[in-house]
Image 1 (cartoon, rainbow, N blue to C red):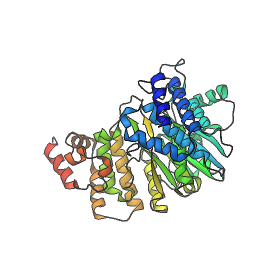
Image 2 (image 1 turned 120 degrees about the vertical axis):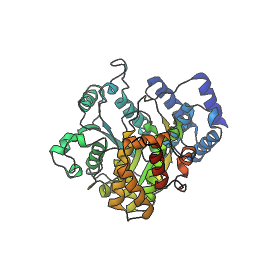
Image 3 (image 1 turned 60 degrees about the vertical axis):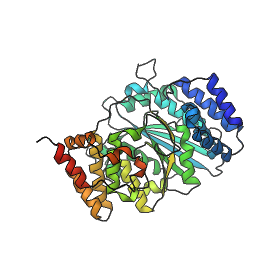
Image 4 (image 1 turned 30 degrees about the horizontal axis):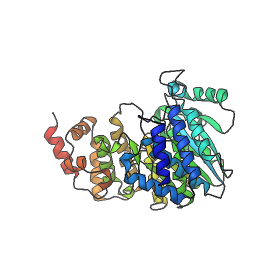
Length: 418
C-alpha cells in the first residue's frame, strides 16, 4: 500500500526510538507524518483501511506512526463535516506550575499549555466552519498554577480564545454548579472540570461540543475529531476515549495493573448499567452542550469519580447514548499512583448506585462490601487477587461474574492479621 511505503520511509529517516509527547521535536515529526497522510488521502475510508491494515500488523509499526494515522483520521473526519461547530477544550491545573514552564525554564518543564493550543490549532486551522476556545481551570492550586498559566498566555499567546478560570471564584460567588463545595479542598479535579463545563455551556453557542482532558500530554488533542465523529455523525450524547479497545494504541498498558483490574471488576458489579464501558477514567471525553446542561447540576462527586457520575446520568437520560472511542495514549508521566484513590472512587460509585439506580440484590451485596472495605483489606485483596480477575481482560468483566462478595470475604478472613 502506498501509505505504508510513506510510513516506512518516515520511520527509517525520522527515527523516534522512545516516543515522548512532551518532546517538541517528536510532536513536530508526528504532525508532519499526520499531515502527509491526510493530504495524500482521498477519503476517510482510505485512512480507515490503512489504520486497519496497520493494526493487523501492529508490532511492525512504531507508536509514532500509529498516532499519526489516528490524527490524520481525526482531521479527515473534520474535513467532511459541513455544518458549523464550536469546540471548547477544558482541563484543570493543580500543582502544575513547573510543568507549565519550558524545559529551559525548569527541568520538569513540558510547556503543555502552548503545546495543547498548537495541537488543536493544527487540527482545525484548515476548516472555516470549526471554531474553538480553551478553558484552564485552577482547582485551588497552592502553587498558583492558574496565575502562571495566565502569565504564559499574556506573554506568548496573542489570541483571546484561551481563558483561565479559578474554582475559588465560583465558590466565592456561590454558583449553583459548585453549591456542594465548601472549599477547593473538597475537589480533586472534578469541581474544576464541572465548573468549566458549566461556564462553557452558559455561553449558549450553537452546535457546541465540550471536550474535557487532562493537563498532561498523554493524549494528543489532534485526535479530537475521533470523539467529535461520535457526536456529529453517530448522534451520541457523549464520546469517551478508551485505552482498552483492540484498536487502541497504548504505551504503558493499564490493563496489566491489578489495582485497576480489581477496581473495574468491583464497579461493574455495582453499576451494571454501564457494563458496555471499560475505561471510565481516561481523561479525554466529548459532550454535547445540551447534554451537559442536563447533567451538570445537583451532583455530589467532585473528586476522581466525578466523570463516572456524569456518564451514569447521561446513560439514564438515554440508554447507550455514550460511544467508546479507541485512541492512542502515550504515557510518559512517571508517577506513583496512590492506591487509596481506587477505594475512594468505589465508595463514591456505591453512593451513585443508591442515588440513581433501583435496588438490585447482587449490586446491593457488593455496595455493602465496598462501603466497609478498608485500605488494609484492599492491599490484601491485591496481594491475593482471585485468579479469574487476574488472568482475564477487563473487557470480559461484564459477563465474568464468578467472584462473589463471599469469595472476597473468605480471602480477607484467611489472610487478615488480627
